[in-house]
Image (tube, one colour):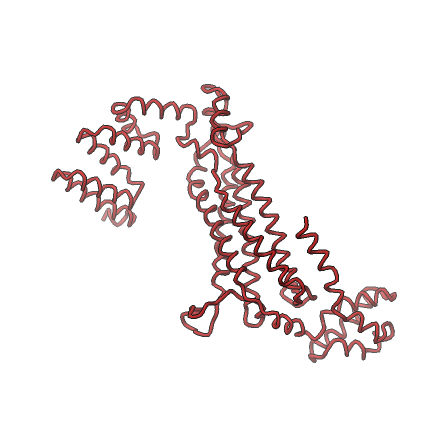
Length: 439
């Protein structure tokens, strides 16, 4: 009955541990140790097994290996009294070094003060920027409809959409560089940050050797606002990734069809409906972004620790540190591949641009009437009346403008033709590109 209350991992580990004990009783030490290590692999928290391994080495006379096992136990739990006692007996020098380290830095892992960051995420951002820049210039003047609130608004170009993503990811690269630099701090300032038992030059020396800056002031640990900024930056980048993923998902919708994820021959889109080509890559990234935002919340909650330190942050960071950085690395690489291999349909963009039969010119007409002297309210009423008629009857906007007597009091046919040309929508594309790409 007791086994039913244990995790599956602990049950599996316990079975292997029993086998190890049987082998040890037969005098088969190597086989016993191997089985015990299998038990630890199944459940690394099963410290009783590591104690047992150390004891087996002691019994066999191998004090060196026994000492190593006790060191491993103390790395996992530096308050293990039995391990301390046995290590002092087997290897007094090693025990003294570990005690000295614990006295100057109570956390047994000094490197946990640093949040060592792999530069892979920075490289991934740079690679994504290259792809986005290439796409922006390739589709610089390919027209499409811009949408606000999900509704057709005014024309843009697909290149401008890519340039927008480029500019946002460039800011993300700058954020990541700044956060990565700021988080490269270390501290060996004693139990409460007063250097009472170790002078500051030791901290300075160690940090320089590790490529870190010293925190101007620390307690038992580096203040966690350093880390919170780093993880929040990761979350911001994750949200930008989601933004691009959601955009691609929208463009791939059947009724939009302007772009889609690359779909290779023989690929399964839906296990139930063979006709479907689902945007599974983008959907995957949308979900993963939620994890990164959750990690950021956890990092923020690590800031208000008790007094000069409690240990509530430690378990959190052991999870979110590797998970967040590795996950962002994966997400950026996947997004880069999605956009690099994305299939674009300019002809469908053109079809969608014509879908509302010119209604997207409504603002241009509104502003032209105001320039003629009408109040905004009066001009809005005239244009909206014509626009709603076109919506309901599916009529072309420009002929209806020319046939409306209220509007014709203010605008000639030639003026209407000029106002409803698409040229002015793309007049400043070159200037925008200069601002984005020639900084």
